[in-house]
Image (cartoon, rainbow, N blue to C red; front, side):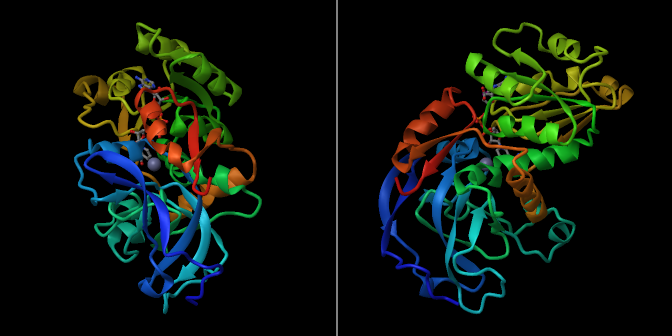
Length: 357
Ligand code: 8ID
Ligand code: ZN
């Protein structure tokens, strides 16, 4: 262990965030001899760009990230070095993914029960530790996820956050085959994958987002109903009317990056239905009417990424071809433009960066 598969350079390109601004810079590469026990060095080939990376750059969450920060947590690459004395069956040359949850202790109550993201020692890629917007990223042997044979690395990248997150959120919703799920934010990175995982689970989909391009994507991916939130005065009425009995969907997976999408969710959800909160707009509030929430047995659940098993399952489903990322592949240097488009809501599906273009 410890020997790299190819020559590892001393410097690399990385997207560095300082004072809420991002710039592509030359930074040192952590050398194999400097890896700590448990760490691996991943040559990152592709990285998806998640709205979370934009929240991190803007610093708009009530959380503190490292500074300067190299963002990115949808990395797909190959293992080029493994820290000495690391107990792992990973080998040099293995194809692996770097997800948001970079590491957790695996010993605490939360980890033992599979709630790894809730571990008090959790480290997050591109937030508390440098992430996948660099050509060589340090990650952790016990949390990187093997990418199945046959799944192209660029398509795999967005599964590492967007895919895992919505797959696990759908499981949390307890919706059963044949039931209806509404997905506000359906035309975005998380949402367009949620449409597909939902159908994989036998659910029927109502998509909410805006614009003809997102409508075309959602419909192509199998959403049976479309609601444009900018052109609809009464969202509650429209969502209820989209279900055959007019009672509303059994579940909502709210993947929107804006708080507005949360405002009506508990009103349009069906009695005994579940609203799963996934999008993380800063300062947003959900207000629940206590009488009707209780009387109609409505539920609100937060769902935060997924554990190692969720990542393996989400990738396996993608490898089967039943879920496919819709993405634009762009050179690494385009990251600042991608953030600008994400900010104004004009991105459809996902952007994947080629770290070497
Ligand atoms: O673990 C988690 N909970 C988790 C994991 C990953 C990402 C949470 N997130 C969070 C991100 O931090 C972000 O806040 O999920 C949110 C969505 O991430 P994304 O899918 O990467 O963002 P995007 O590609 O920009 O898509 C967001 C979509 O929401 C739509 C936009 O048009 C866009 O297509 N949208 C908005 I903004 N307002 C809407 C509204 N009122 C809306 N859709 C419906 N109704
Ligand atoms: Zn993410």
